[in-house]
Every structure is written in structure tokens, then in C-alpha cells.
Length: 350
Image (cartoon, rainbow, N blue to C red):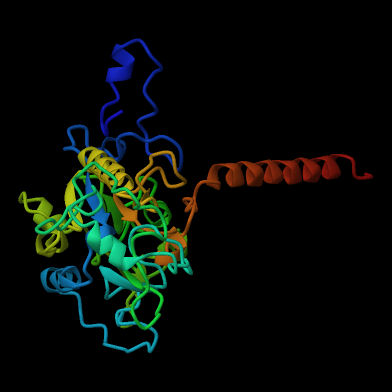
């Protein structure tokens, strides 16, 4: 069912539409309507295809320039070319650089290539679908090249080194369907927009910091200078005038794609199918499912390895999911204590 479409099933005589109020967990097909926008436009979001990210960091720069995010220092970690290190109050977009002993194409690390004959492969150029000959730079779309499975398409380099690959991914606030940061905010500084995104009002935030541990992704962060929290707004000011967010606009490879969330999900599923057909069997989507622990993300990803490799939690759950049960148990305990107190008062010796 499409985002915002709660009438189709009802009209067809199926199950009634899910509750329209703002829920803490579970199905929530229209977050904007639940937040009080009866005529909301389609929910907008990001699809980040990390398989085409080149690590140029244009998104980081564009985000800082458009949103006037202050400079956050250039610290060399000694472990990677990733000098911004992670998302924070002054880094609303972060491009991760992950070096692996694993070549692109789905091969496993440590594969023995000793049986691969490069001379025979050269002689067969133009005679097989996997070697289409001069002028061809890639296999035909929708078709997996013969011999593409692990360990057969990337020989060792002449000096015997194991092949390496870089995984690059531009991370950002996920704009969750069930945003715990918003639910725990006591001042209303965090709010849901008509586009289904989550935005901080810096002039309302009092710096209490409740939202920081509530985020299952560790995205939202306090600025040291004044204690207020900051994060990606999905360029709310640009969306209001029909413009795409600055990071997506600046991405030279379309790794960051912006648009209606339903369209992005369909596009992402087709992209994963093409990658699988091409032999990249590790390709997977992360955060696109409305059935996950946060009800689906407004910013989701195509990854080439496990989420933990990119520093993402494998199974995030909205931290306010159990609040109703906790309040119920606390209420029962309070009533029980009150009843015991009354009973003790009534039965006391006179």
C-alpha cells in the first residue's frame, strides 16, 4: 500500500485502514496525516545507492554551505581517509570510507585464484558473454556474466596482493516513521513536517538532550557551544519552494536520490535486482521496510555488505516502543500500593 493511501483497501472491502493517530510503533502508512496534515503531499525521502558512491564528499560540502553548518575540524584518524568520522551536530551528512580485502563482484575474502588462467581468458575475448570483446566495458544489463560467481573474475595482482575494495556511503538522519526523538521532546522543538520529515526548531530547543539517547541510530547530537541539538532537516526550506535537498542536488553520480518515498522504494528494488543479476549478490536494502523496528526510514540505503560494516545497527527499534506497556505496569503498581495503603489504614487497631 502506498504512503498515504488508506482508502484503497477499505474501498475494496478488505481490512479497515490502520489507526490515523500518531503511534509509537507498528503500521503507520501516513505519518504526515497522523501529525495533523489532512492534505499532506506525498512523503518525501532519500534513497542512497552506495554502489555508485565515489566518496567525493560533495554532499557534505553542499549540506554545510546551504544550512550554514559550522566547520567541525579536520582530524586525521590514522585509520582511514574519513576525516569527518561520523554524524554529529556539525556534520549532518557523513561519507564513510571502508576499506576491505574484498573485490567488487561479491567475491569472498581470501579466495584462491591460483587456478585462473589470464592468458586463456585473454584468448577468449569476444567469444563469450562474459568477454564481449574490444569496445565493451560492461556486461549487458539484466544479464549475469558467465563465470561471475565468487572468486572467478578477479585474479590476484602480479605481486600476489589480495584484491581490495572501498565501500563508500553517505549517511544521514533517517527521518524515521516512528521518531523517538520527536516523541520524547518536552518542548515541541522537534516536529513532523507535511513532507513526513523530522525537523528541529533551534529557537525552541532548550538543550535538555532527551532526544539524544532516544535515537536508535545515534544521529541527533548536541552542539558543545550552547547544548542545543542539530541534525539534517532534509533541507525543509528548499522543499517548501519545490527544490531538492542540497546534498542530492550536488551528488555527481546520483548515489543520493530524492523523491516520493514510494517511488524510491520501487526504484531501489529494481536496482537490487539488476545488481543480483550482474553477480553482486551482497547488494541489499536497509531501512526501506515499513515492517522494521522503526516503521521504515524516510532515508534508506542500498548496501554492499552487512549494516554493521557501515556503522549502522542491524535491527534498529524505536526506543519508545515499550512506553505504553511501561506506563501500564507503573499505573498498576501505583494502584496496588494505594490499595495496600488504604487497606492498612482501615484495618489498623483503634
